[in-house]
Length: 184
Length: 246
Image 1: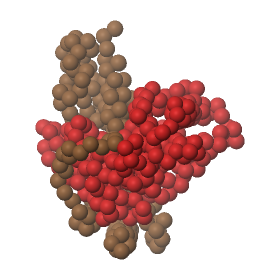
Image 2: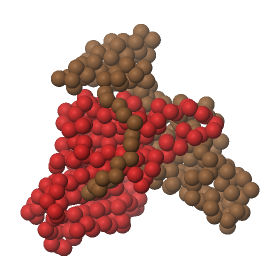
Image 3: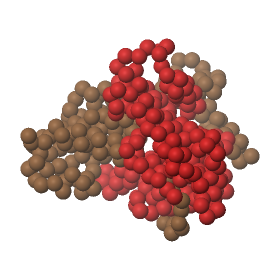
Image 4: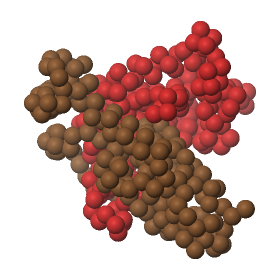
C-alpha cells in the first residue's frame, strides 16, 4: 500500500514537473502519457551528457564551466592516489588528459597535472553524477523513506556486496594520463 | 569451500556450491570465461569488439549477443533511459548488463547440475540460494563506502540477488578543500535486493545514475528493495528493506 501511494506521488510529481517544463517552454507538445513524461524529463539530461562529452573530446584544458554541475569537476589531492609514492622525476611536467573510461552507468575521465615530476592534481572531466535529475522533486518525496546513520557491523557474513566500477575506471583513466606523462 | 578466481571478467569471482564436485565448479568458471571471451570490450577478438569494428553483420550475431541486445533495449525502457549500452562515441558496451546476466546463468547452471545450495559472487554482486555447508542461511554484508574493511549492514537475501552500484571516490569530495560542502548530499552507493541478480544488478546500476531519486525508483519497483548511502554517511532504505536485515 505504501508503495502504491509513493508510486502515485512520484507519478503526480513527475506530471507537475513535466507541466512546469512545458510552461517553461522546454517542450513543444503536451505530455499526456507516462511515456511522454519520461521522455521530457530525460531530454535535458541527454543534452548535458552530450555537451560534457564533446567538450572533453575536443580540448585538453577544459574549465569547470564546461561541465554542468560543480559536482562533476572536483579536484582531489594526490594523497589517496597510489602512484605518487613513486620516485620524483618520473613524469614530465604538464597537463595530461586520460582516456574516457566506461564506468557502466556513465563515463569517467580525468586530467592529471604533473609538477616537478610528480602528480600534483587530478581533475574529473567526466563523471556520471552529471546525469542527476530534479533535486526539488527528490526532496519532497524523500522523508517518506526511513533513513539512518550508517554504523559498522561486526557480524560474520558469507560475502560482501560493494561497488568497484568507478574506482577501476578512475585508475584506468589516470593510468592512461600518466602513461602520456612518463619520461621515456 | 569457496573458490575464487581473479582472471575472468576483470573482477574477482567466488563460487561456493555445497556438495559439488570439482567438475561442477570447473563448469561454472568455464561459463564465466566463455562470457568474457564473447562480451569483453577489452579483448580485441571478442564478438562485441568485432561488432564495434563493423566486422559482424546483424544477422550473424550469436544468440547470446541477440539476447543481451534485446535485454538492453528492455532495460533502457524500464529505467527511463538511464541504462544504455550505447556509448557517446557510438560504440556498444553491454558490460553493465552482462555481469548480472552471467551470474544468473551460472546459478542456473548449478541448478541444472543438481545443486540448490550455492553462493556466486562476481565483483560484489551476489546470487545465492539455499544454505551453506553448516546449513545456515547465506548472509551478505553491505560494504562501507568510506572504509572498505567495514560492513554497515547485514542482510539475508533468501534466494534473491544482491547488487551494489556506486563509487568510493565520491566520498573523498567531502574533504575537497576547493569545494567545501559542495557534494555533501551526494549518493555514494546503492544496494539492491531483487528477484534475481540480473534484476538487482541492472536496476542498481540505473538507480545509481539517478542520484537521490534512485532509491525512489527502487521503491516504485515491485519485488525490489534498496539501501542507499550518501556522502554524509546517511543511509535511506525502501519500505520493505528491513525484512532482509539481520
